[in-house]
Length: 192
Length: 192
DNA sequence: TCGGTTGTCTAGCGGTGCTAGGATCGCATC
DNA sequence: GATGCGATCCTAGCACCGCTAGACAACCGA
Picture 1: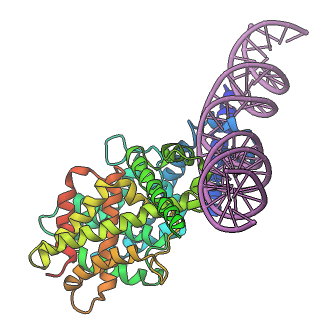
Picture 2: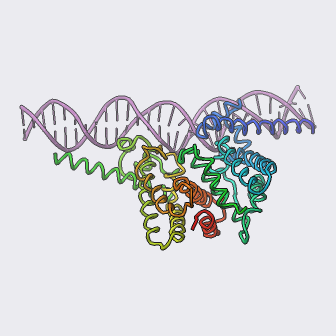
Picture 3: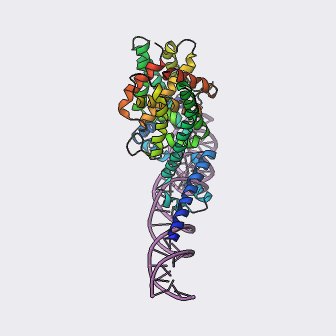
């Protein structure tokens, strides 16, 4: 049994290597540069090996997305718990979200821009994604306002952040006013 | 001169045909299905002809985007001018924006999701894009609130709409609550 | 030591965006 | 009306893509 265990361990290790390499390559040169050939070369295996771990490129992107979702959820919770009072919490939440998107553009793309074949907003949504949404929900609950469903409020807030994140990064909004936009958004949306 | 004029006319006509065909194909089967080969076949010319009109596929997407921007600007202005009072105007604006995105997903992608090589938020931004933004700005001016720069307010409002449009369409937010999300957004953001 | 399974690689399929270079067509001139 | 010349278009092909069939080697248990 020990031999088999070792093999499984090595296999899992290689899978981590694939995901990490894909992420790094995407972050450095964009997802377009992440081809199965290049990825295989970097991990020093042949192309078909990738397909013994993942169904295809989509699933690799999906793996990066889930990794990112886990990190984002943690970052959001950390930021929120370090802030005092509802208003500060919401501001910290928004800043952290946008900061994550700006610092990990490729991961953010994997999560929300590319088709990674992940289910959203359904029962079989992967746990990390649910958890990232939950991290928002937990902290926005208190500022949704009377008679407003917290889930609905979170969706709107999230959408606004997502819009700011993507439009800013794609150069569709001037980057220098980001902070003022965040303040305006929090001012108006959050009932404090 | 008449011969040359006729040729130019035919050339312009063919260019319109390329853009219209690309748009229709993208709307029917998605941008992935818009390959230069397929596009060439549809317009009944060979591939290289496309490159005598456009630098590459990106520029074709860009042409569709500009067409879409013109239409969106018109739709926004029409909706706003048909509404009575600031509150109704903003609501109509938001609904029209989201409706446009939902009805013309491929065009919307060309405008805001794909890299069409267009400049945004600079001097050399193409006029149709400036105009679409202006159509929002004109009608949001009155609800930005005291001391808030209308341009900044428009950016935030636009970002929120963009987030709702993209997340809803990608199945990342439940589609049935769209209307309630719009109402919440307008309620909170617009100062009426 | 052997047989069989498991794992990996080479090679190749049909597709992509894009382009070089040859052929053909239509125009202006003689 | 014949002819030379440009503009126009197409065939063929480049390098690359995601993905896979089938040959091969390495390792395990008996």
